[in-house]
Image 1 (cartoon, rainbow, N blue to C red):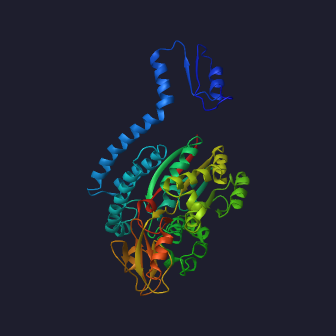
Image 2 (cartoon, one colour):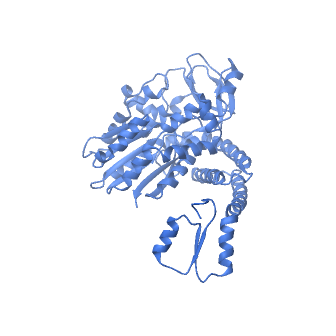
Image 3 (cartoon, rainbow, N blue to C red):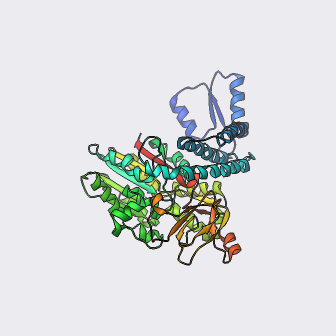
Length: 454
């Protein structure tokens, strides 16, 4: 039957209970399996499952979301702590992914509006609490911040006997993208998931250097000025000492590796394929740190590519693109290879997420101000404080000074900065692009995942 029309649902009803027959039936892609004697309710259940299953799950998903919608809306009216914000973000992301499976449910706009309202309140929460976190990092009542992650999740694994640790940092990984990847990895690994808050600005030169060094950006500049480039916020120049910063962290923590630290940056498919092909040569390496840049390249490339905008016009399509990439990526193949190795521990995290930027915020500044769309530093910067945090004293945010008169501005919610010159041209050009560097749940609340083979 399946050879004639693979779309026809087939249910096998048999008296034979042998496992071999069940295996053969499942291998033949039957839709369900019943053993005799069969009562009418079983037949009805199977028919409902096949003929109305998608409709029924969609109806109950809609009902469950509306219940959660009310609970989240009420929670947003209260004073929330960082753990409650993590819970709200996880719920919203879960619903985003769940609604992808039910496009017939007309709740996408309602969810978008709720996320928009949540980010508005989240920005206020960060503005009111972030500086206090910086001054009490590591203390009870303070969330895990970027500089603590490597020391908390990676370094303790190095103290175990004969363990090889693989530390993957996937640049620009959003929580919803991780959920897509997690579904594929759950067949191979036991997955433990926790969360942390990225430092500000949520941009690679600041966040990833902080992740590898275990220090805030101002501390890197203070203690290792040669490793902190004070020019433009260009990843190629400002992130070229990540291996050295990680080695210095190991030295400060007095951790001596069995062999040399391995650091790999996957910036194109060829590097990823070579790493995949040679993965067994790393199985005895004490610590292998791997930076994966693909998602960040997609986020930035979408701004300039009409083709990518066509392929991923919204967040649901962006997740689908992530799924397609990951399924066929060298990263997925590499992780599957590691799943078969004993004494291997894997930690996966990211330096920051990204947000779909939909609203422009006019900014004034001199010609030497940085070009980033979600944060800027420069002289005489001016912006509406409804749209951004204005940082007069960078040291309060543990950011590099860059000069006596240099200030920072960091965008809130889904705003992006546009200069008055050719304002409408650039407002249109950058609208509906994925950006990072600012304050939003998508950029700041990040996963830390530990994988162990099953």
